[in-house]
Length: 220
Image 1 (cartoon, rainbow, N blue to C red):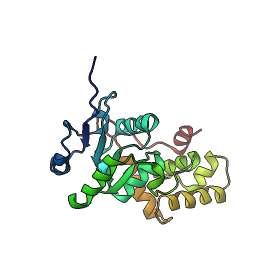
Image 2: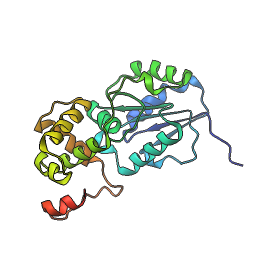
Image 3: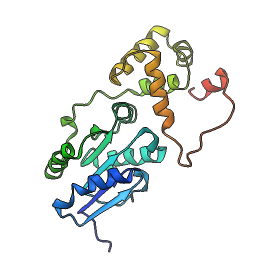
Image 4: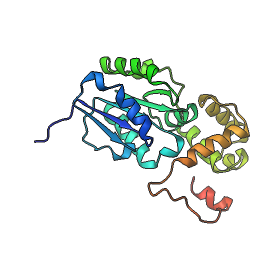
């Protein structure tokens, strides 16, 4: 029978110095094991960790990580998961992919992080205490994805068989939920973040651009 590693703390991140810095805060807790992973997708499915702390940048996320996080949400919700990221990546993970957890600034100091870890270990986190913005609806998520691929509001309205005013209203609402101004620049920034979530082999497709007809077929 496999022994459950209930005292294990997992640290996720591609920066070794950041991971070791976080680990240095845990020495005083005398937990039996600290395990390091570069990505969420490397964590074993049957792990029974006490706490997971991740320090991520936009270039550190692949689709397998998103799948792991969504499965984790289904199994244990937001319990004892801390993600350090910048504000835009936090909004992408939470609002677009519905990843609920305790988010902290990527540049938080170890001194600031220490009491948060203590509080998390002493008390199970609950989602209501996070104070995060509302998540995107299914239609809003689709509109954002299409905008990030270069579709215009007019093109989206034709694909979704809705008038431009309705699509524009959804666009305004989703940008508000993302905490960003409703401007082309903001859409471009979000597009870069969404496109940075790579496939596991890290290779981006090199096919020629799709025509509007071909792109529309992907959303029908």
